[in-house]
Length: 541
RNA sequence: GCACCCGUGGCUCAAUUGGAUAGAGCUCUGGAUUUCGGCUCCAGCGGUUGCAGGUUCGAAUCCUGCCGGGUGUACCA
Image (cartoon, rainbow, N blue to C red):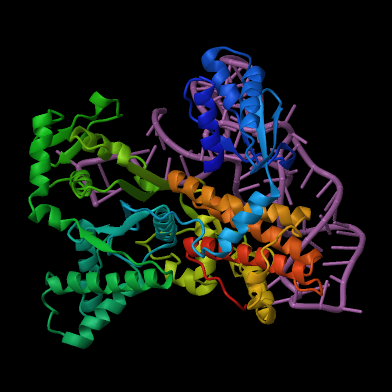
């Protein structure tokens, strides 16, 4: 709430109160006004003065400014200051929304840049439901950053050289041999999914039995990688995710970045040699255990390229770096952060978002999953089952840090229990009314007096709409999309409530125009919110 | 064992990141609607926020200790 914080800052200045961070909130109870601040309570701690007296000083001063936007200021409870804005203020805001289809988007002259890394699954198999949560979170957070004036690079980091990929190649080779009835031992930890057989078949149709006695041939691994990556990209496309960049871990070796990191770490004295391996002295910075960076075999562990990769991100000079990981990484990223920091990177620029795992519920039963054993539901299957809108919404409607139950039955339910349909239905309804009103449209500009929007619901809607830009800013800072989902639900609910009790188009022309403007405003906000979530806003359902 | 995350009405979750009387939806009970889409709306039932302490004007939120669930804990990625 820029207007209010400006007024408050001025007031602090004029009254010679110490500068303080100003926190403006929307009270839960709307008897307390449109906005409130605990400023007096915070100041009272700092200057040891009764908060009520401070609040009185502040309100007296603001009243003396006689701002026409403010209707009412009051002091409540232990020293909260509550503000109510004039109806006119909200009417003007609505007119502004209608003129500005990108209402809520922050346009910056000089845009900041952000890198968001997500999914980053190695090409060993189809994306799972767990990847899906990270994928949708990452894409939605990217959208939110774009709405906050960032230029965003969506990046996918992968490794096609490790042990897992070797096992993948061996699994394919074995299936290939089985096609020709050759005695073939399937690797102990091999990938058992059907897609391995599909890849083997592809090789067989293309090259026949050319590689039958050559199970070490790179063709197996290469084909598998291509096949799986195609599949992953296809799935991502289905859920409307597009990456700007794919970063191959291998490049860090060929470019010499790994070696450079190692020598820098050595110079900083934070690694040491023991038993032929290179260790990170993690205990010295209060981590649980020292960790191996280079094995005695000379092969680095995954931590080292991770550090090199993040160093590379910092070298690319982004203003903000966001990592999105599943809970299985929660133990490893602090090491990477610590190492990065020791290499003089400003880790305040980096935000790590850890999401908990997804539990799929079908008929109330948990579905257990493992990629290697292949008894999983793939992300693509889930998407085909419930549709991309529902899929995306379900993955972000809960905070990343909670364990998510994905109830397939509920997701497929096209009724009131399903929050996606509730939202889209509100949008479709508005579009339908606007369609009916086309004969009014060309005269819409004749009326810009909105004073007939005077009922409680209408005013609540006006306030809700006014809050949208602040909401975008807030989410841009905390990076928690479920806040937007909740907001849209409550806006949709207000609209449905309004709709049930009021006719938009009636004989009263002036009222009709005012209400048409109101629903135009709702429509724009719903559309923008849905766009950020990557969900369709259908005109018809 | 240790580390991280979670615990909120019967169920699934919110709670503006420390704010005022803890809110929604589902279920259940009872109502509305010849209307611009009945995929909608209204009312009621339902709570000692896992338990016990502590911090302060103020705690679901922060600290400590238990209890219960999840994840991780390799010279695997």
